[in-house]
Length: 195
Image (cartoon, rainbow, N blue to C red; front, side, top):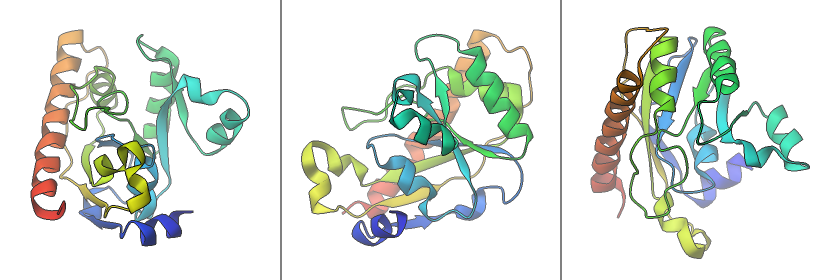
């Protein structure tokens, strides 16, 4: 499926060198399409785990998603099981993707950050790679049939000092900093590539 997406959407990616080649890291992309996760990993050379809403893990899709390495999260609450699983994967030098917005944007604009990515960044102490996925906003309302060009930009990693017991304010401040980096990268990408 990935080669078909690469060709059909004329996928290109820049900055993959910002993704650590062997160590654990958090990938933090914007989220505007159901296909974002495929575009995010299509041109990377590492396995990537995804955080996904728990509603997706129902039968029959659930088993497939679990085998694909996804981590369920119960949205709207502080889900300690998801946090523990993600921290374990990061310690095992894996890549974990979490959409900082907490879900897909329906407006075509990047939403405010949810606190979960802040907690994960602080508790793990691992680098956070902001990612901008440009072009998928045009896929809304059947626009995917026109196969808009998609560009993925991997930004410079952000590093936060490890804090095993962050306050809610500390976690939200980190989440806000991450989403600001994603917004800046996205704006640069739209200006350069979304024509």
